[in-house]
Amino acid sequence: MLIDWAFRQNPGREPVVKRICLFVIVSISTAAVGVAQQQPWRGADTQPEQPVQASQPVQANQPVQPSQPAPIRAPFVLTPQQQKYIDQLLAVWETKNKTIKTFSASVRRFKYDSVFGPKDGKPMHVDDGVVKYARPDKGLFRVDGDRPEQWVCDGESVFQFEYKERVLKEYKLPPDMRGQAIEDGPLPFIFTASAEKMKRRFWLRAVPPPAGVSDQYWIEAFPRHQHDAASFKRVEIVLGAKDLLPVGIQMYSTSHDGTTNFNRDSFSFYNVVVNDPLGFLKGDPFAARPPFGWKKVVERERSEPARVGAKPTTGQR
Image (cartoon, rainbow, N blue to C red; front, side):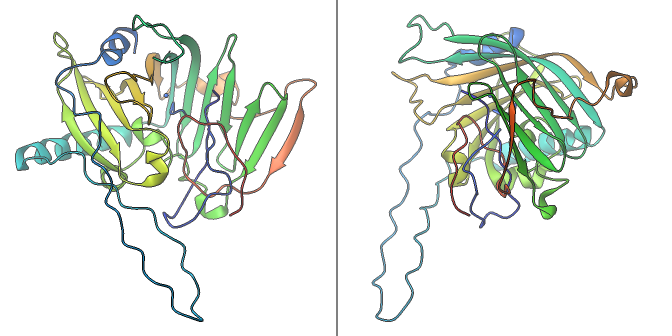
């Protein structure tokens, strides 16, 4: 399924289109194997049920207020020592990210589907592609082969390549979203977002890496808000201990229950190049052009952050 990308500045604004773009990519060579396996030390896969909010009677001649989604409860509680550790790790990671002007890497995606895929724990699909980023707000994700996917953000628009329809869709970004759309999307799993923004959007905790792995930091991220919870259940982020660059990401689907359903996507990043001094000689990777014979369509504005793992759908603001 094509990675979907949309952007959002304020939590209260509803999307023009529910999701578009990374699945970040922006969704682990040696790390991918460790990411793909279930580890006994990881947090419980089943989140607590959400509290039910009592409905209020509607008074005569009063406008009906739209119902608000029930808040999501925290899936865990950290000790003061654990909270201090994750705060320190996020602060160091943020400092490292501020030095990244350009980033490119090869990416390998492992798609696991326990319903329609192999029953022996092997991935249903393995796809290869590339991911690129340029500060502050340019990004590219492309998968090649039999299941091609591609999206590009040039800082002013998001371009979605619809290979089946042979259509390149352009989604203009509102002026107030330019320069930060990627930071508010799934890419904070990789770079750019501040530690404070990460903590406002996710419940975060550090977890031990798999047995025998000593050169990585692992972070679990659980969505705090419904717009993220509709796309994934939790994310595992793997950083190299030496440089804090992304090694891999594993994104668990909303149906993942850890018993009969293990649906997830694992991403392995390799051939990483940061701040390439010769990058200007390689052309502009963020100039999206329709292939020969394709049609280009300009859609309405996007006003929501990137969402992971679903096809874009149209709708009203």
